Length: 409
Image (tube, rainbow, N blue to C red; front, side, top):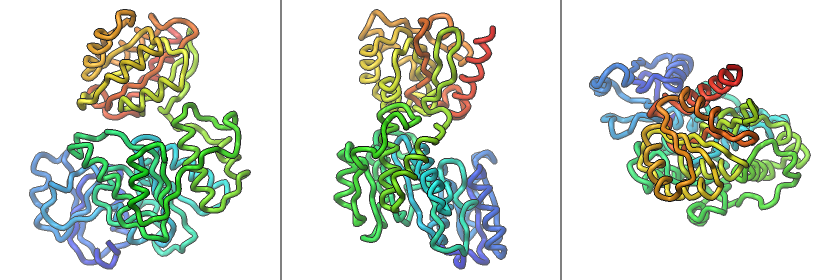
């Protein structure tokens, strides 16, 4: 929605987290004639009862459009409608933040005027340079929540991978995939669809898109030893970023320097340190079985793994098989899905020690007591964090804090 269409309107901003607050600041600066109201579910069950008193709602991604009874838009749509710059949109079930950050670092190293924003934590409307020219480049991490009702496509859409997640919000895997696919719905022949050809669903998207299909490059133009990221999945993230760099004419040497000096993001196979001959890794970002399997396959030898969280009904059978195959001796299980994983493991193996844990403190204590020396203790829960923590960041921060506390006790 263009700014002119917002002038003089009565606008209700729904959801007053980081993005909602940024939306209010943006409206106050660029649409001072608008009358702005705010509401949030923290205000109570009736927080949307007054919506008919407004001309328009701007909702945040976490609020379902099914709850809105009057015309609405989103900060994401306002951003796309009002920028003159190039937008590189990045999505996928996992790896969005790392890939977005890699693309940003490559372009920054190339001296481009580039901004990193979106689901990665910097609100789009805080970063939007209204009135600037086409030299601006925005690298935007886009979640399925943002994409579910988007009305624009980025000039370069990057799709890393896809597997089930956020079923509570979307209701089914089909609706989740449909939301993700919206990143290419409004693309034209002038746009690009950069995709990981290892996923048949993404190959199908590429065939259906009006954008020019560009598969990830097969071979990186620099050695793996210069990549400061663990795991095959992170090679995919680097391949995605370098593919975008190639499209934009960035030199191989510039990309090599940017990747070599890239600092891994927190809670993504993050080495916390080695204490009492145990190396601890924080992979709190892994909230699905698929991403935890990738983490397990990226590290060895793992002596202990911490799993479990909010039960979303995921199938943990393959994860259990991978844990057994990699001979992980100890599995610490958080409620609620940890109970399901424990039952599966007991059916499949008698050699694994299983420890229920009702708190991170309990889990870290058990880790120090039972993890064999010269092995790894991995936090990678294969489930959303909300059974015990408000998000994966809180979970990972607590893990790191307690590991360092117990190391000196």
